[in-house]
Length: 147
Figure 1: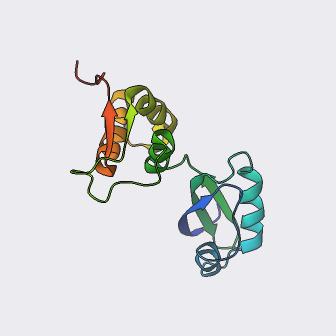
Figure 2: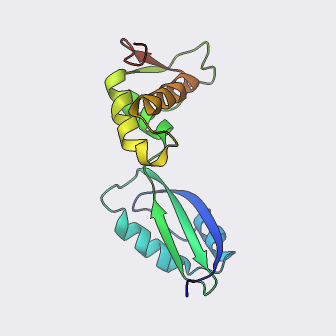
């Protein structure tokens, strides 16, 4: 018989840097999960990606046990890394803060593909380009999407 699920917890934690302080401690403690056990397992599984922000979905069961799935870094974080800027623009429609080319957009789309709700690489690239645009990042070059 399968275990009964009591809830899901979604967090964004830096790889290899999980600790019981907020926001992790209160989120897990309210569901009765062993906080230190989660931190140890998470840090062990993400030690190859130190400092990268990684979304994690934790499934909590009725016997207080848990499982978690680590997803790929969010698109805005990957765009900031690719364009080598500190953050998005406060006025993305007027003030541009950086640029990426279509090859970088394609690499991010391929990396993020399992977590996006699209079926083709072209639609994933369109989503990544839209995120870049809303952050004030120019996408340079000729678009492979307008054929």
